[in-house]
Amino acid sequence: MGIRWPGSTEAAKRLQERLSKEVVIRRLQKNIHTIAAFDASYCAYRIIAAVMVFTFPGLDLIEKAYAVRKVSFPYVPGLLSFREGPALLSAYKKLKNEPDLLLFDGQGIAHPRGLGIASHMGVILNKPSIGCAKSRLIGDFKEPQPSRGAYSFMYNNGKKIGIVLRTRSNVSPVFVSPGHLVSMEDALKIILQCSVYRIPEPIRQVDRWCHDLKGRFCGDAKGRR
Image 1 (cartoon, rainbow, N blue to C red):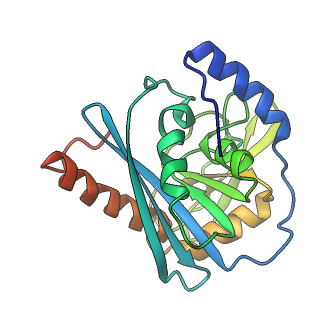
Image 2 (cartoon, helix red, strand yellow; image 1 turned 180 degrees about the horizontal axis):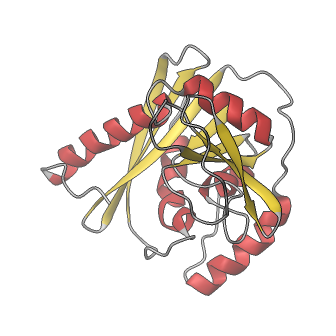
């Protein structure tokens, strides 16, 4: 998995524009039995990347892995995959069980250049992937109804790019977008099946573990991002 990562923001944006042409949005081609969720934390100049694999739809933990690497790319909105991607891939390579689908706390195609971290990692690994973010990066939408399961579509320049989904009644929605090899409908169904609270359970669990890892490596667990 020898990936070359650009060292400048302009080169990263050009790569996003090129790789976005490789993104495929389509119905899932096979049933999903396992899901891998990813997250990352920061400790000074280091990034701690974590991945956890769960059964689906049961959401029982199968295995988990992490990697620690030096931060080599600045924080730039819209370029998260270049900052976190190398460490996430290092953690992924340690897995013994190959997941059927990848889940990220971030964007899929709901991105200025159509290649959020879920799309980028999905293309690199050639895996179905979904982005589920706590906030919107781009796009216009109407607020969905307050009940669980209510949703509305998100648009950018007239193109449908994602779903604003209420995963819990009377709680702020999440922003879901397909990353790669997944349809809008598949993404909606899977995120809802994974959600008990506002944030899908696989993302909640890997976030908590990443928080614990930060405490282990940094001596405290404050100021994650």
